[in-house]
Amino acid sequence: MSDTSSYQPPAVWQWDSDSGGKFANINRPIAGATHDKVLPRGQQPLQLYSLATPNGVKIAIMLEELLALGERGAEYDAYTIDIGEGEQFGSGFVALNPNSKIPALLDQGTSPPIRVFESGSILLYLAEKFDAFIPHSPAERTECLSWLFWQMGSAPFLGGGFGHFYAYAPEKLEYPINRYAMEVKRQLDVLDRQLATRPYLSGDHYTIADIATFPWYGALVLGKLYEAAEFLDVLSYAHVVRWARTISRRPAVNRGQRVNKVWGPEELRVPERHSASDLD
Image (cartoon, rainbow, N blue to C red; front, side, top):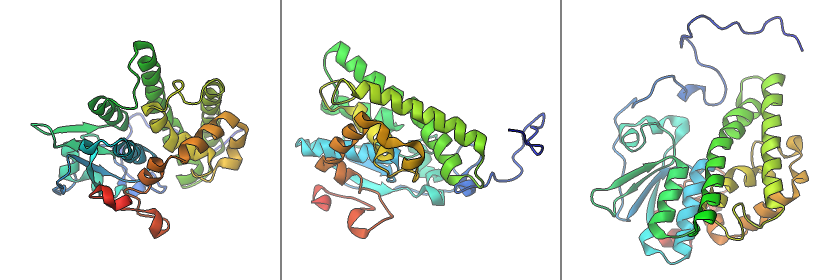
């Protein structure tokens, strides 16, 4: 394929215009806060600042799973960070996460309070704090963490790569869509081969590896991400579909997917959550 109008990069890139697409108004090449805004704090031990994107949903699901186990120390207040409006660049949020990405967690049950950012790090922190959803034996724990870090390294190709060029870019371009579709299908094949021999990613038990991976790849094969199910032929990955359907039936997963959700039918969203009874 040839394109006589192909882009010729300058010697030194300069930020002189936005890149277009759905999130152009919040994209910028520098870090730090753009405005002062103090984050609210509730009375629960854990404070979650997030949005019901795939990365944000991971933590709400984990917290709801912990509450389902009876862990009262996992009670949390959830506050919505509207990334479309640039709220992740408020000074209070940047103090929790210098990278200005949701989710961020504040554990105010410790002295001093502990901030945790990056969804994989938050999942690991909570798993270790409550000794739940992470195996004990060195071999099983290592397998679980390998799949957790696989997800953290792989999902940017699905979201920032395929999702951006297929669903959000200002125009559809064949090369990037083909490039990232190929990689996403390779990743789905990796998952499918793994799940052909075990019910969950790291073995016989549901762990933080599954909690991390489900909101991305589970949502994709269930037809809830980027309207790309047919394009990627997701039903051909039968073992991933079986795994995703199993997890989607967990009550805590259904509750967690509603936290910090500000779109869709009102009965399926809980923009902010402040006690266990909110999702009963």
